[in-house]
Structures are given as structure tokens and as C-alpha cells.
Image (cartoon, rainbow, N blue to C red; front, top):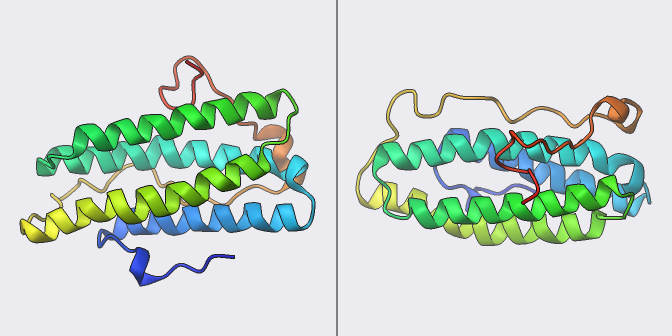
Length: 170
């Protein structure tokens, strides 16, 4: 189990709160694997991750655009890569394949390689350049919603529609 620490913080409260939710999802996945419940509980976790990516990435990229962050293009590519991998896992899950361990590996890598390093670089750039987040830049959908239980998972599938830019299969 991972405990959120200030060392993971990038210094942007709205984004840090979203990252705390990501850690919570990773911990939920860990619990489900330990209790051998990954099959029945993965749908709600994938659904929550789709909601996270849809909201969080848009807000983060908007903040970077508004601030003139020079690393935006590469950062957006990383977000798109995450979404492509999530689309692959969603397709496998819908085909009734076990994706829990692959998802856990993806989230562990994402947390440390992207959130701590890449998002941390954005926070460091803001501080080094004395750039503040413009008012209203952190508005948008709240991605910090609870994961539904397996009992309600029937109505919470991780669907990927053609209109969804993030988890739609390529």
C-alpha cells in the first residue's frame, strides 16, 4: 500500500488532490488483488481512471497552455500514451481477460515516472519562473469521485466510445 507523501506533491493543490485520488485507486487495486477480487472489481476502477484522465489531463494541459509551459507538447504525448495503454486494457477487460496486474504495473509506473517526475517538472518550472496558475485555470470536472463497489459495477463499465478522445481504441 502506498501512502501519499508531500514528496509526491507538485505544488498545485488541484492537481495534487487529483494525484491523491490516483494513489487511492492504486491502493484499491492492490487490495482487490490481495483479496483475489480483481475480476469483479476492475470495472469500477477502470471507470474511475477514465473519469480521472478525462478531467485531470484537460485541466493540467489547460494550465500548461495558460502558463506558456514549454514542455506542453511532450507532456500531452505522455497523456495520450497513457490513454492508449488504458484503451488496450479496457478492451482486454471487456474480452474478459485479467488485466489487474498489468493495470497495477501501469499505475505504479505512471505515478513515479509521470506524476512525480514529469508533473514535478511542471511545478518546478512554475516556481523557477515565478509563474502562478491563472484564476479559473483549475476549474473543471472534479475527478476525485469514489470508486463504486462491485455490487454497482454493472452500471459502471469502462466504455470507450468513438467520441472519447482518451480511451477510444486507435
